[in-house]
Structure formats: C-alpha cells, structure tokens
Length: 136
Ligand code: SF4
Image (tube, rainbow, N blue to C red; front, side, top):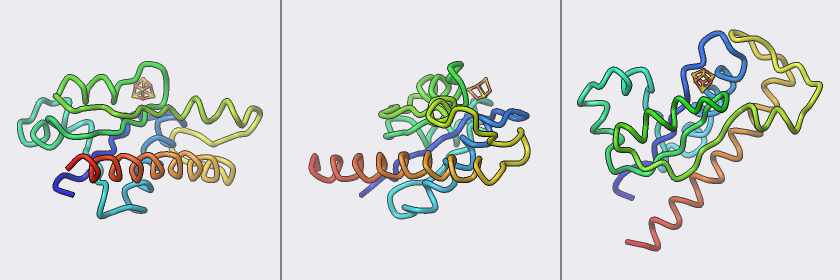
C-alpha cells in the first residue's frame, strides 16, 4: 500500500471523551502499523503545509469526542478524504452508567471501552486497506 490510512483524533483536552478518542487513535495505529498512522490534529489546524500534505487526498478515519466533530471537519478542510467517522460519545451510549474517568485519567472501564473503540477503528482500517488493495 502506498499511503497509510490516517487515523486522527480530536484534541478534546479536559474531557474524558477526548481522552478516549486520542487513546483509541493511538491504539488503532499501534495495532496495524503497516496500514495506519496518526496525524496530529493540532498541527493540522495551524495550517502548516507539511501537516496538510500528510492528509491531502489521503484516506482518513477520524475519532471525535462529541457531535462537534472537530477532527472530521478540520481534516476535510485540509483536503483529507474522511471515509469513516467515530465518536467516543456513541460507544459510551452502549455502556450507560459506566464511569470512564476524567479528562486526564481513564478508569478500568474507561480503558476497556476505549479498547472496544480502538478495535472498531482497527477493523475499519483493515477493511479500507483491503478495499484499496482491490482497487489498485
Ligand atoms: S469533538 Fe468535541 S471533545 Fe473533541 S475537540 Fe471538538 S468539542 Fe472537544
């Protein structure tokens, strides 16, 4: 595969949903290092050419904390092709009543739920990589 799939989380500083998004993005790229890599959203939104070049025309997966979709919107603005969008708030709906932690520390449940989110993102990475291989 020529270009790795970009997995980009929102910043979400100070919010547990943001922390979950960032940890899930890191874990997904770690699980499939040959297929995926992370790009820093903060670098991208500063409009730095080098960062924009990393996503322009590339297949991207975004993970946002909430419906504001900061990552998905910024990546699209930078020319990235967002093929899948995830939100940590959605996976938390499946785990109503669980305490995932705070903006800086995840609980045991928080790590487990974040692992589930990372697995969903990794499955999407594998699926997209397969599709791109077939289309070459
Ligand atoms: S998507 Fe939500 S949690 Fe993430 S940076 Fe934007 S406002 Fe914060």
